[in-house]
Amino acid sequence: MTNSYLGIIFALLSTASWAACTMLFKKLGERLDPVGMTTVKAVLSAIFLLIIVLLSGHPLLIETKYIYPIAVSGILGISIGDSLFFASLGRLSPLALSLIMFVFPDFFSGLFGLIFLKEMPSLLSWVGIFAILGGLAFFIFPIEKNSDETKTKLFGVILALLSLICTSYSMVLIKPILSVVPAVTVTMYRMFFSAVVLALFALFSGKFSVWKNLLKEKDYNLKLSGTILLATVGGFWLSLLAIKYCQLIIASSLMSLEPLFILLFMIIFCRYVPKKKEYFGIFFIILGIIFIVLG
Image (cartoon, rainbow, N blue to C red):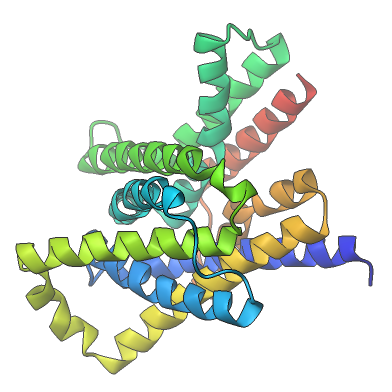
């Protein structure tokens, strides 16, 4: 089997892992608040990544000049960004949230290009942009108008977008470092600094007393640890292997299929019957992406 085929397999497995984790975190988050979920995730991920770094032979120690930007990146992208993500996950379906997190990075890039770089999109691109926004509306807005569900979902969208902004800017901070320090080492330190800040916050706010009884439950602990391990190894590690073994554009395209994997898992494992408006939403989003590519 050639390296390209290996890369494709790793990309699909990584996407499936992220899709499964999003659904599992949705279920587990019903009992643990967003900050608690982020804290446990950061601590366990840091431990898992430390083991990966040691086993893979990557350098553990880094130059002190890289510590500050990595620390800020971890606090902004994980401590704050992930907490906002889990908060939005409590208000949106995994499918709707994954579509927002998938579509809006490119949308914001185009919007910032228009504002700051004066890059005017083509007519086809404009059609694609409005098709994507229309497709998302099918997932975000319920049929009934002015309902509590609408307000809840809109607040979930706001939290998701804030999470996206925090995460995106945190990656900007560490992008130059990734050319000299392995990504797995950088991620381990980001998780470590995030875990320290979250643990201190929990200590001074009294959150630990609320979490400890829940985290003593063996069954819940096993499910949460397994999900975090799947996210760390299945999601993150396999995505690195995918990028390593095949072209970046191919890996990125395959790893953007998370919403479709989530829909498939919901149908198979949750006996979910998609609504007609969700089929319309998926159709318009895919159509919009095609128009943007053509434009």
